[in-house]
Length: 327
Image 1: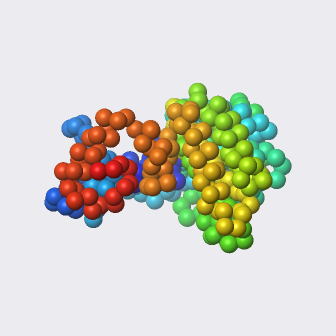
Image 2: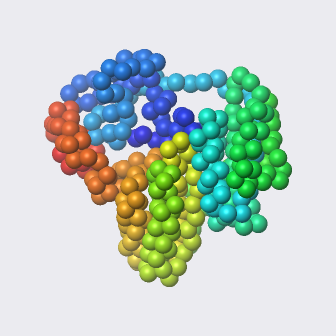
Image 3: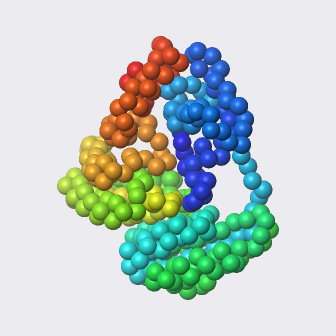
């Protein structure tokens, strides 16, 4: 899949870090040339990375790596208003500073993960470098946040070599919650509580309307099938032209109806994304859950090209049938 990682800017997806791949297909071996870059036609690497196992099985890959960071800088910035926090995240994304971490948590997400209890939205900002100290970058980032009403009560933290700058305060609380969340979700389901997430990406000019629609639609669906629930939002990645919002919802389960409840809430969320021209997934991939909405997102001529590639590479349709497209 074209999975996303923890870099909030620049290197957001695995294809940004992939130099070449080797895959086995029913028609033979598919191996690309290892190059720092190429303008020779469509990328064979990106085609395979996004194919979700439908065209071949990747057996080897050359990955781009960087030296371990020597310098780190972190800060947490609090905002009273969501709109101000969004504007600050946008300013950082368009500043050319390229923070390693630029994660915005709304007040519900911040409270859920014990990042803050004062009702503020929190923007977690971080920089890393193997080469140089980061004070000028962090100072400018905090200036931009202050321009949009943000405040950093504890100020920035700087660390060098093996010191840990992000394991205390708001950043540390967020890190701990992120690691524990998958285990907690399994426990909650066993206790009769439904928990799920969904994520997307959209341009800045459409984000406010999308966010409002998602909140209304998902809360409405939770009210209808579960009698209510909890919904929060955060940004996992930011781009100069838009954010990648990530939503978490929690609702009481009804024994025997859990799948129907989940389906109703998932459908409400996905339809809201489609109404605003957002992607059905930013980094979780399509799989089978997202297939109905992916069918509507992609151009039909592109779907025809994928089917043709499938017929040529996998004539007996043995590789992950039913994912992305029908043969």
